[in-house]
Amino acid sequence: MEQEIITHLREMAIGTHGYIVGYDKVFRGYQGKLLSMGLSPGTEFILVRQASKNWPLMIEVKGNLLRLSKPEADALCIEYN
Image: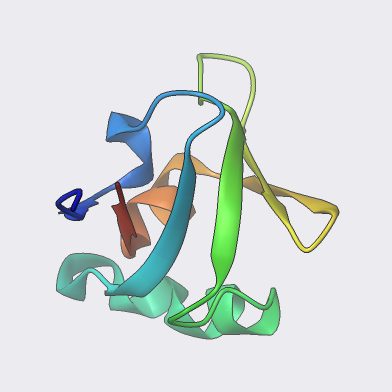
């Protein structure tokens, strides 16, 4: 059985599937916005693009692409295996 790892989006490889498990306490101010985007605990996603200097991070959730700024992405605690 594979072990699940709790981490942040910036530490994942492109194409990795994961689940949202919560929100980082340091970035709690983003929780409401993330919830309004449908990013609640238990939500499954695929990392499509890593954040770079000029581009936001992108994830796919239920067939929709969502752009996340670095602080928004850092607010998510995720799990993947």
